[in-house]
Image (cartoon, rainbow, N blue to C red):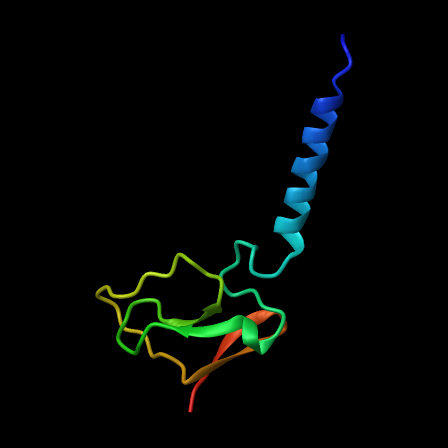
Amino acid sequence: MPECPPCILIIIALLIVLLIYAFVPGTRTDPKACATNEDCAVFGETGDCNCGCFNTNYRFWTGGGDCFCLAPSSCECVDGVCEGVFG
């Protein structure tokens, strides 16, 4: 089997991308993950379906719908999760 130095470089590059994706805040798939309060934002309004606090980098939020949600007044990061503050 011939040596494949470019293959090794491609594998190393893919591993680096996966590590960045796994450990850099905002790239994780968890829509409520956070490190600081600045990572969290209120999405939607009261009455929207699925309103609440999500990571500011969360791109897949969709509002509207037939369900009811009470939107928080602000958000904070509690134990690595964006939580709503009501009041």
